[in-house]
Image (spheres, rainbow, N blue to C red):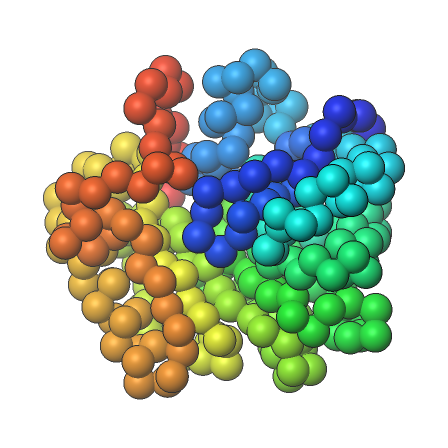
Length: 279
């Protein structure tokens, strides 16, 4: 795997579930085609030029050394560190990335810093070892479908849906806090599916975050997209309430939020052309 070095690793985040973040890989072999917001931003900033560049991840070779310098300086400011916002910490079939991620989580936990982790890969079972990793960590997977054809087209390099769910359930059954990010959830013109059936597959989790798909022309062209997402938000809310699961509906998903702007994901001056993919 290609390697890069950086001058810093920990950075402050404005997202509600993590005040600091780490992105110890550049690029992502999952190659999601919604399009991927992280890829769009890296392209806009000139970090990558093409999709082919993006799906060839580069590991930050000095990540652990940077943490040794940054943790003592920032430790008193950090409540929780998220892995990751612009890459995937347990990238499917990338053992070198998995190995580094485990070392990063262990180092943060050893310094009394808990982590939230989000992946479209498969969680290693060793994370259940609470003598090595903090029992206060939170582990999540992204899951927006159970349709294999949808996965092959829009999430080609990711782990199979069932494998993601099974790995997350293993951590849940080991007593750890688990949640699911159902974002970006696709409209019916991209894939026809039953939201309740997907929810039933993840009824064991502690929390569900649900959000709409942005930056895709086919979504904006779907005539009833506002009603669709408003109805989906209600389905998620009702399901979570009935099953005693915490939930968060992302701003702009339900109709009541249509005039609100979520600062974290705003792209006011993005000059990239919208991307569409045939279904």
